[in-house]
Length: 101
Image (tube, rainbow, N blue to C red; front, side, top):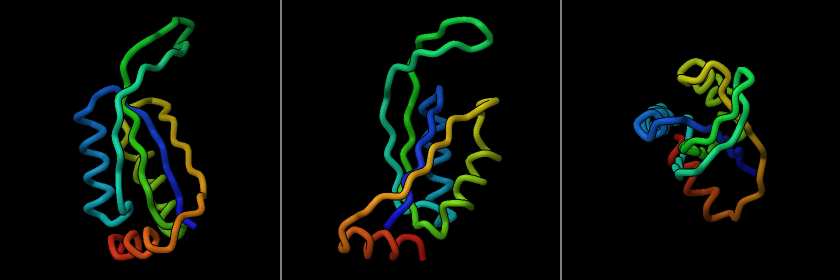
């Protein structure tokens, strides 16, 4: 079992920076960044804009610390931070454990 954490950011630079910091601190084994279009209401106004989705793969034991790091370092006033637990194949899990230690 692993933890998958997802958040979004308005700037590619911020997504790259957060992903790298989490990797450097061994709070994530891997990060994936993709560009998407988000639609939402903020303060009563409709928005449609590009965002970058940052997906982090980490161990269940490091999930809480990784989420705490994101909350402290995320540039949004109210960041979307979703974490879920997923099953994964054993060889990937072994690789991931090497990256986190």
